Length: 200
Image (cartoon, rainbow, N blue to C red; front, top):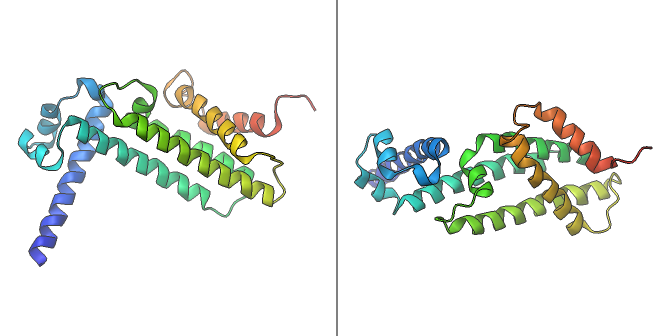
């Protein structure tokens, strides 16, 4: 019994190691330019060893993307579950998302670029967007309950904020503003979201 547990544990460790190295290589060269030979050489195993864990390059890339989706979801859930003021929570959510997104190159490029060879990307994007709307909605509902927000349509407000955040991902994560101070940028954007641009 101990042997089968050890074998399963070793398999998990090997799979995680392959995923870790594959993340780095896909991140550096992109999906199309990366080959399984590149990954096998970096892992110091034969290509046949990769097929033991993953059916194809697409299967491996999907596992890499799912790993990064899980990392982002985990970080955002931590923010959502904090016992903080809803405005601070919204700020922390946006900040955490942008900071984590900067480090998730594969997920970022899969979301932003047309990876036509990979059919699962659209499913992941749809699920990711729905999860994000659900999390933002939770913050907004909490804000109304605590009498800090005035919102008449939670779904529409959550979609609007999610869309605004999505529009910021490219410039703040990898575009022209990727070198700017993230906290200051998020504070400016949040001020516009919460108070608008009208002079008071």
